[in-house]
Length: 396
Image (cartoon, rainbow, N blue to C red; front, side, top):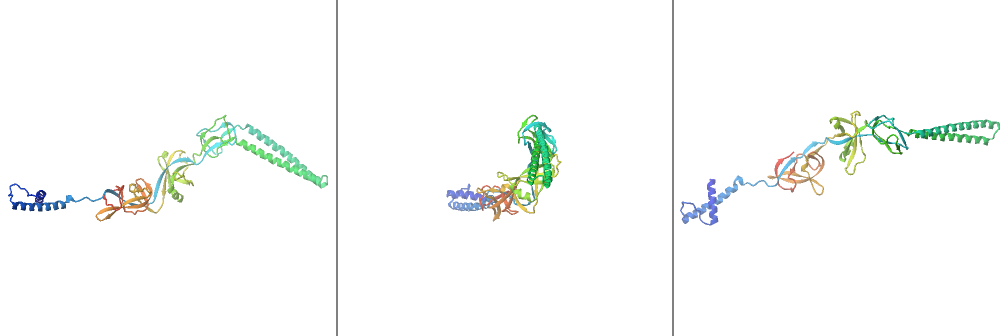
C-alpha cells in the first residue's frame, strides 16, 4: 500500500508541478483519462505527503543542548584534613657572649650532644681572675676597718657612761662605724660583680641539645653579642604546619590529631600538646600550628618532612556536588544549574549557592542546595534560565 501512495505522490507531484497529465506508458491519453489520472495523482500527492509526515523517521529530536547531570549528595560533616609540615625544634638558642674576649677552649664540636649546664666555650679569664682577687682583698681590708670602728664605738659607750668622753664624741664614732660597714657592702658588691664577670667567660648550655653550628675557633677574639654556637633541643621537637583560617575555630574547640613521618615509613603517631599562633599571615590567611608528638623518643630530627591528620568531630551533615557543577559569576557569586522536569522536556534554572571547602573533585555547599537535586556538570557554560536540555549522561 505505501508503494501505491508513493507512486501516486511522485506522479501526482510532477503532474501538479507541470499542470499537465500524468504520463503512464501503454495508457489512453484521452481527455477523460487525463482528467482522471490528474485527480488520482493529486490524491496520491496529498496522501503521500501525510504518510511521510506521520512516519516515525520524521519525528523531530528533543530540543536543547546536551548536558551531563549529577545528584547533590548529603554527606557526614565528620571530616579530616591532611596538612604537610616540617619537624622543628621547640627550643633553638644562638648562644653569644656578653663580654668580649679571646676564645680559649671549645669543648664541643658540630653535632655533639650537650647536657644542660655543660660548658661549651671558655674565654681567656686571666684578667678577670686578677680583678676578682683584688676585689676580694679590698673586701677583707674593709671588713677589718669596719671591725675596728665597731670596737672603738663599743669602747666609747663605756667611756661615755664614765664621763671620759662626751656624747658628741660617741656619735662621731657611731657614724664612722656605719661608714666602714657601708664600704664593706660596696666592696662586696664589687667582688660579686667581678665573680659574675668571671663566670661570663664561660658559655654554658641553657638546655640539653645538639650543637647545630659553631661560628668561632680557638684563638679568635669575640665581641659582645656575637653568635658563637647554635644549640638545638633535638629531643624537644614538634611538627609545624600551616593551618587555613577556616579551621582555626575548630582546632581551638578540640580535635583529634595524628602525625606521620616519611622517615618512619609513614606510620601514624598520636599527637600531644598543640600551640596555635595568635596571629596569622595576612597574605595567605593562614595560621602557624605547632603539634608535639606524645612520645619524645621517635628518632625524628628537625628538618624532616611530616604530615598532620586533623579530624574534626561534628554531628552535622553537608551537601556535596562535583566541582565542575559550580559556575563563578563575574560579580563573584557562585551558581549551579538545577535540572527540573517541566512538561515533556527537562529545563534548567540557575540557583545561587554558598560554596564551602573543596576536597578532590567535590566541593561542599553550605547553603542553597538540597540532597537529591540534579545539577549540571557538563554543558553548563552557556545555559539560560528556563532553557530545555537533553540529558545525555549522569555523573557522580
